[in-house]
Structure formats: C-alpha cells, structure tokens
Image 1 (cartoon, rainbow, N blue to C red):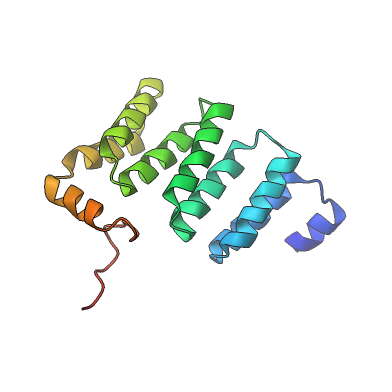
Image 2: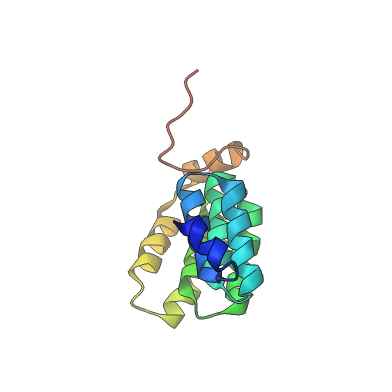
Length: 153
C-alpha cells in the first residue's frame, strides 16, 4: 500500500520516510537509507530522517563514524531536537568514547533537565569501569553491544 501511495504522490517526504522505516524493520540498510535520503531530498530539514540514516549506519552497518555525521547534521539543522543528541551519545558510548558521550548528555540535560533517557545514559557512561574500556579498545572491529554474546572459541 505504501508503494502505491508513493506512486500516486512521489513527492511526499513522509511517505519516503515511512518506506525507510519499513526497510529498516526488515534490516535492509541500503533501501532504508535510500528511502530516507529521498525524504531528505524532498524536505532538507527532515531531522528525523537524518537520525534514521544515522541509526541504520550504527545498527545495521556497524558504521559508528558514518552514523555520527548524520546525528551531527540533525543537530546542526535543529539544535533543539534532543533525540539526535541521545542517538549521538549512544554511538559515542558504543565507540568507547564515554567522556564525549557524557558531554553530549550534559548538553541534553541543560536543555531539558527532566530527560530520563539522558540521566540513564549518563549513569551508564559514568559506571563503565576500566575493564570495560580495555575490552572495547581490544575489539575495535566488533559491534560493541554489551548484550551481544561472546563468540564461541
């Protein structure tokens, strides 16, 4: 049905965004990113689409550096879109950059001191001990999700 809507109204940025969400849910990073890019081409200030590209890059492609560029672009377009800061802080934490993540989260709290998500992420950044940091640095090519099981030997 969504494809039909886009056939009828191909200049509907929200339609392309939704198509990107469908592809993202199917873990089809290439088509998801293409759909989000199409949404952005139709609506250049579509910060949610920039964030979704960042999330696709982070989650589906394990491209933290690429993800950060899209979160930064979303923040540049709308510095009050706090979700972009939270996504960026997540990517920084996954990269082992806990100090940078903490700085980002403090910016969120300066803008919205009731951000429960920012407090939780900040607590995590501060709770990571040196063993965790050493583990992250020792595996730069591996996805850094603490809940990913260790590979069998």
